[in-house]
Length: 379
Image (cartoon, rainbow, N blue to C red; front, top):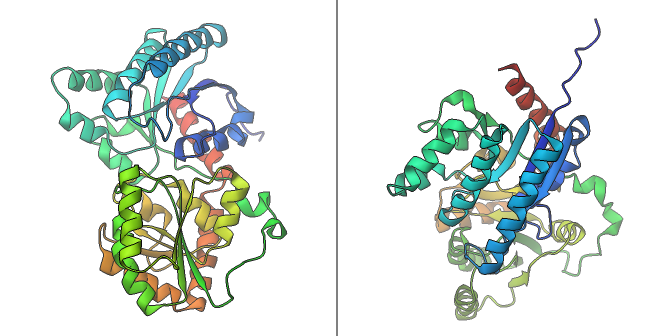
């Protein structure tokens, strides 16, 4: 029998494309390059509110941007007449009001709005809300057609707020760097052959566990003196930067620790992953981190935390190790275990690459999105 015809859907996606390169923008870059975007009639509204420099700040420039984007949003709905609006929502306090406005306009114009939540903090926002924000959040959750989340942990966070049938799990993906960039594009290593390198690539912040790492470093370096650590990414603040540099100086770690700054391109990111032997991400607050997907795509074993959907990416004892949040002793023990055994790193790295290929390629992402939207069509 012939296969049933797929419905070609009109979808307006409201999000952000890189640059800058961070979780949200890279998810949409993959989505727009995927088979899902080829199968459907997709318009993209690229809304650049977020920046490292003005994170969570309200500025006049952002207000003007909001009005311009809102006008363009209404125009796209009127001109393209999408059936669905897939909207990247934030549950931080200030962005929530902007997102509520956009979603309410979409609902008022008869669109089926799907919230795309790449965090897991709707419950926290609801619990901390006052007499105005809480009913506004309830109104929104009651009227959207679905909520797309990144993992089972996020689904659980919504279970007390909306009916379970509204919660759609559609884990993200990253492009396969091993296909994009051949190994011969990577510069030769400058470190001695016996050196083992630990990489952390993330926003350097307290929430990403930087102090958990710092407090583990003296023990790790004393145990594995040929280990070196590179921290790539922007600092959360100048005060934190100065405090970290003071810690490194006070513990005489300067020859073993490097802060290399923001990574500005996919090639540079791939090169820095390929220079490493272990990837480190002891986050205290995370939902679903794409830096872990980049690591396992490059066959790197990972040390991370039991947080959010991270255990759905990293299998403890198989593709890396997971520790409790803030456990510097556990972190140092696991790092020492990995750094001492090239065979363990190789075995976990192979398993990590297999995990990526089975679950986190753009093709798998497209398949998950297609299945979820067809489920919405069947309702």
